Length: 283
Image 1 (cartoon, rainbow, N blue to C red):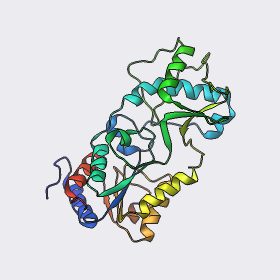
Image 2 (cartoon, rainbow, N blue to C red):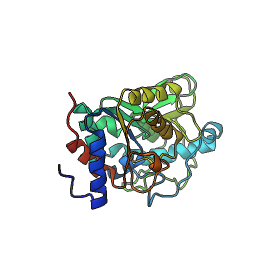
Image 3 (cartoon, rainbow, N blue to C red):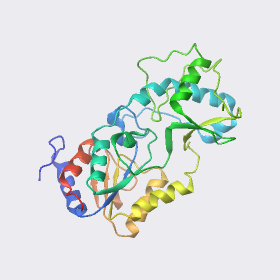
Image 4 (cartoon, one colour):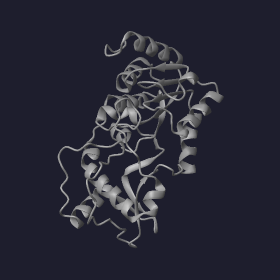
């Protein structure tokens, strides 16, 4: 078996150990922001990540000025965020599913890149930036359509070709003065992106779906997550209680390195591609 040459000796050895413990098993994959950094979307906590103070759900729901700042920044970053392409890591996970090795992917990301890479069973724990919904009547809107409305209502907005994109596809606006916040076209209610804000709980049915995917698996690969968010730790513990092998792939330390069967300190794109190439197809 050969491991891609991009990996150094220690990482290549760790990948070999991961292949040994995962071979012949069906695995679930849990991904965090580190999987999308090679697509040009920064993470919150990785080395070199920009210092950001994410908006909380309380701020968004409770302050019109906060919502105005959010929508300006989100719109300015939307074009670059939506244009991001799946990278080798996303494609490797889709290949693992197609070969019968992976049961599916649970992701903490809101960029939709797993779906675009071809993964069929994707549990988006924190929602998706592709949709916006009305907090009053529940009407759902496509984010692309909403972007058109924003530009029609705010023709003065100039979206630059190059922006300092944030982890969730936003930018830090210089000003939000005069911005017309989009409202529901059905009831004029408040619109909210279909994502879990900081301080907001993951919907119970969504977490149960993630649990079911892990329960149907015989191993767990965690890629690109520092596991600071409790949902990831809870899924890891579900796997550990069943004595399943857990492989963590992340540059730098995570909150659960000591609980991993194998920890691989390397880039997710290279490692996931190596795993997809090395693990034998199931069935």
